[in-house]
Image (tube, rainbow, N blue to C red; front, side, top):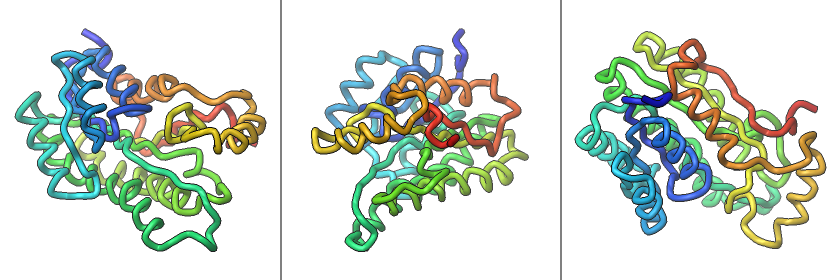
Length: 247
């Protein structure tokens, strides 16, 4: 049995990138995993590649009704949920003075409100499981300010604080809640196209490790937190940024 053998997990935003990497590591270490996303073709292909212990379900993470359905469907397929990885998120760049209200609210809904809904919706299932682990993917932008990125920074700082409050409230139920703070990780969200290369070159130059991270380097922390190895860690921040925020 692997490090998370017998556990049932939900990973949001899992069609590709970091979410797919998290799901892959959890399945490889014995968990049964439901992957959710809005990218259905990619999500279904990712789940198929992971075998019989993985399922893909379409989910709008900003909908409480869909969250409740995902938890219900997961229980029907695999049993009570013991791991939740709130990974779904989006980013955008631009000055505060040109940021539109609708764009700000969209980022807050997807990055922040979804985490609230996920933690709330999974709680009854984790109680039935006898405990669990919630892993909220924040960002290095949840630790320091980042110019041209106000909405994203606001959402990720919020995830950091929500994690600590939920950790206190959920501790009596043997449920741990932690946040992970990746720096610049090589995914399509971080590297959307050639126009971002100059910006990324500057970030890499400012990172003591002098490189971007790989999704699997974040997944290693997800796996550890999902496992019983981290049974005394809750309300904590785990930074995976090559030293970007330590200066």
